[in-house]
Image 1 (cartoon, rainbow, N blue to C red):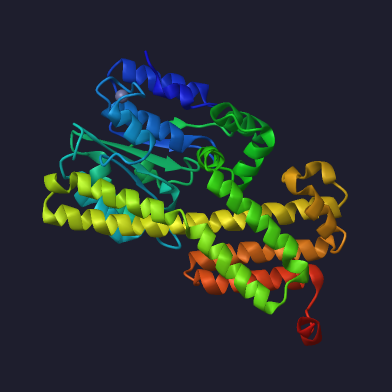
Image 2 (image 1 turned 180 degrees about the vertical axis):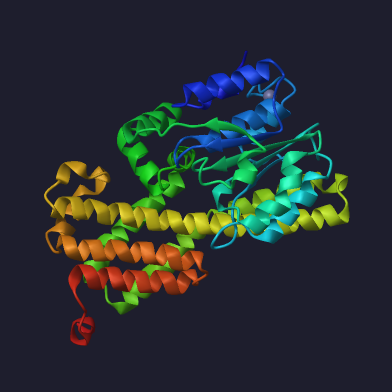
Length: 380
Ligand SMILES: [Zn+2]
């Protein structure tokens, strides 16, 4: 059969299992995909969604399959936690009421619910009844880091599909195979995507993201000579460019809604609008964290060179600047700079404004790497 599951690289058992349930017309209604970050769960979930929605069990080439692959099919919904600590109860209420509504274009609906290990007891309890007895047209695919980290009441209501950890070299190979990228590009993309293969693939396919990464690295290299005003400008530029793809997301949301609006009740339209708004802020957070991941990966490389392990550098194309910086700083300073990255990520999750967070971060990184800047130096 034409096969959407061949894309689930690195997980042969999962692939065979999903193929067999689809062939036997035995797709269940509640799955828990359990596996570490970067084990291809999201990719597998979208492939299963294609098999559920497509009239040909997931041909990969019809309009529905293509929309699902582009993540714009209105009957395949993706959810991730929108609160700092996990899912908001209001997200789950929205989900429950959405589940009960009829599909918009297809015969069935699929919900991909990421990080269910971050589903708190209250939110989980609200969700149990839906999970246990979803409407006939609904398939729920829950994704979690480990089975043990998901509440037992959730696990017991799902069919658990275990995913293995994919080693880094294999992950690089997967991204190369899927995109034609070089191993260097693939490694860089995976790092920038915090280890996620599917987001790494997205990153590789976007020349704009690669250009953005280039600029982030340039700015980091320029910090040595930057004065306070430069830093403010760099921070503003980074935020602007990090968030630029949001315009596209916003546009495709508007187009999707316009295409479906005539079939939808006012209340449903309002709900989609609210959901789009939340999706946009989740995406905005994703880009912010991606920027942080690029910075982290560069600082890590400088640390590798400064500690005498240049063979472990990942951003090989930025070697010159990395070596230059490593010669001007020390491993303890680099470790402190790296810890500022983590602190800033945490601050963003707790709603510190991106502007404030980015300014402070660049000041701190400069200070850690090159010492405090005296006022007289700035004047020169
Ligand atoms: Zn299809």
